[in-house]
Image 1 (tube, one colour):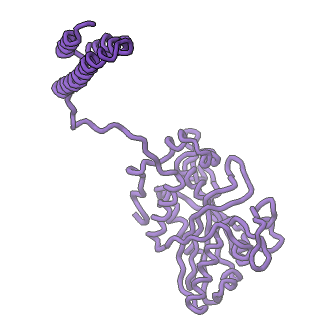
Image 2 (image 1 turned 30 degrees about the vertical axis):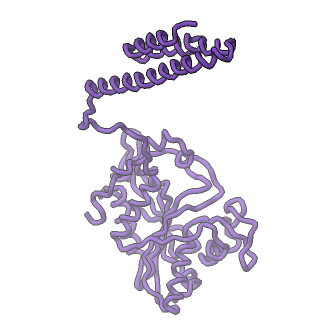
Length: 371
């Protein structure tokens, strides 16, 4: 039998002088590994007599425990020495900027909605909202849209199998005009039909069965409604001119109103914006009658039809108003230079990174209304 104490002392000396973790690991394997010297001594206990085991067993186990404890203590000391050495040589420069972290961006549609709300708030308008699942009456009938109008056809409108209390099918609203109806009806109810002035814009999602480079099944629309006494087309034209000049932040924008037809307004007008072509791109503003100029349709408008006012419980002989509507997505395309509406809804992060707005540095309408 080898001298257990001598073996233990030899390993304890080696452990004490181990310079690093690798050297310490080599000692552990040599002493306590599967084929280590002390491990092999433990295996000899099975071949000893009972008297020999009682004599040698405590010595061998004691040596194994002493070596294991010494290794653990030395490892802790080596780790502490390495940490102190790193702390002495490494420094953290607290003046350096922090590492960049992933961050989201504001979608162009959301940005334009905020700009619209800012412009019309300066003009005394408030924002109104309503349900996106509508009934036939609010979406069509109350707006003086006849039963034979193409907009009611299945190929234009998304209908649900469910019906309302009158047996008419529910549908996804095709415009935000039902919110105008609901707002006028609420005013009529609150005032017992006497009425009061209304100045609202209605931004929101709308749905139509259409899809190409300039149309999508779901799109965003903003409508405006003014109901007051003595309202005429001059008020409408001034409001639209003020709006587009503030939105595009140019004073040289020309509007053209063309006679048109909408069931819910009379008279009705399509509104065109003058543009000029610069470096192959259409720019809103400038002289539309010049050699490189032209007109671009942007929205529909008109005086609210008396039947619509009457359907909402107000007296059209007392209250008049105007309404207008345009696509928010189209406004974003015109202002920020996008050429395909479908990209707005593709969910491509590269597109969002390119056209999105930094939440902490979004553009604002520096001039505002009337600047």
